[in-house]
Length: 370
Image (cartoon, rainbow, N blue to C red):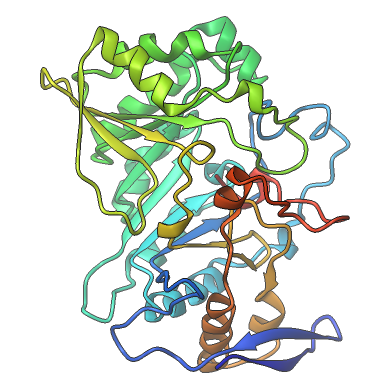
């Protein structure tokens, strides 16, 4: 049974309230209220980005006057690794580094090297991945691979240069991203997954060109339904292109067949080209919610644990980490946080159930990662 413990924060002179649970037996994962295991830890290492994508960091909000997080507020690499190590004891098998743009975090390859040394209770290395916009991969890919990164996921919403500039609100081009993808593949960070967020009336005409471009490349293109993450992107259900529609558009040109996938932990539904041209994926958080199989915990840059991409509040681990708590206290707090988890935002949204309490605001994607 969970209970609440009070731990004094000597650095901030205030108390932190975190639930605490008994640790699961060795080799068994912590479970939430719906028996979902903790399997994935997504770690946001910065809230900064060199893009101003309209669905994530619109410039009218994240302008030159926006106050980003100071470096002193962010978890150190040692603190991140400690949380990750304790997460592995609780069942984590996969770590994804996100942002903002994670490659803007100075010396991130050092962090990757530290995380690459972690092992599961059975002695297996973790799957260690990173999501990026790709613009810095040309200079970073080899070092990331050498440090121990397993593979990368690259965001690319259009191949058309004018459309790309409009969506990313940056001076970069699709060719910059494609060169990053090539560099990642050459370094051995493969298969590269390429994520495209599809919005009706904006870039939905890029669906088939993107599919055509990445067929027979060995990369896995994934189409993501436009989601209502955060509060600043002006989300409108009318701009959502259902994944079923995406699949129909592609299969008219290049026939597809469904691939089997595990339900627990599944994010993308996998489809293969019948002619052997590779595979694609669709991520359908709006029209086919996959909350029942969600196994992801999220760590923000300054050390808050969030239990859902659409959450409005996190749980402050940094205060605990910097208050002198030992590993068992931190691990029991992490287990307690997970044990109280009952998040299923997308399922409830699909039923028309009010989700975010009045007066609260959802966390922004640029802060917690996609």
